[in-house]
Amino acid sequence: MILNSVSVDCVIFGFDKSGLKVLLNQIDQEALRRILPRQASPEQIKQIFEKHPVLNSDIYWSLFGGHVPEEQDLDEFAKTLLYEATGLENVYLQQIGTFGSLSRVPYTRVITIGYYALINPDYYKLKQSTLTRSLQWFNLNELPRLCFDHEEIIRQALLKLRQEVMYRPVGFHLLPEKFTLTEIQSLYEVILNKKMDTRNFRKKLAKMKLLIDSGQKQQNVAHRAAKLYQFDIQVYEKLKIEGLNFRIE
Image (spheres, rainbow, N blue to C red):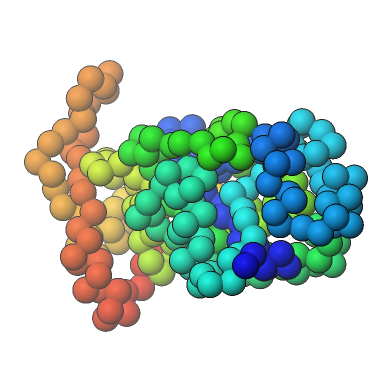
């Protein structure tokens, strides 16, 4: 049984040289029409067809969401949702909070639980679900027209991410397997929207002993090749238990 009044929406963040991005999908109108009779009463379907933005326009994009099955935990369903919509598995997933405004969905009352996921786009081959017409990465300051309150969910997800990176090194999930110190500093500057002193940043990072020198350097670059580092997950897990404070300011 599907709980039509409870849903999950996932914000997927990715990072590349152009900055922090969010992955959005455009729902296929015909595919949505085909599944509606299985999830709603005739009166609800009438309201949906009249008021759902996707069924009345082809300009809307949305987060990855779905109504929660009665037999699944929220975290479990969020993982299932991500896999079915994008093919993503074993990604960092964090709950944001609950969104329950009376007007968030125009045709019925739906309370949604927001999550954010962190991935490095270079490491994942995304797939489209049967409901998706298109997948695309967008810069956070160049978002398209979004369904419902999805822009607010993205905003809250970014606030949550900014809080999270101050005490846990979750930003590493957005980096490639091997990265330079400049890349990790750039990542944190983008997330926190602030410029950091390079010397101070690297000093704090070295003190945490979270990085492993890979013994390799950048290749095919016009400038002097920089060292490549890796994240030491074992040290992170140990320090997380001990109460690691990852504040970088």
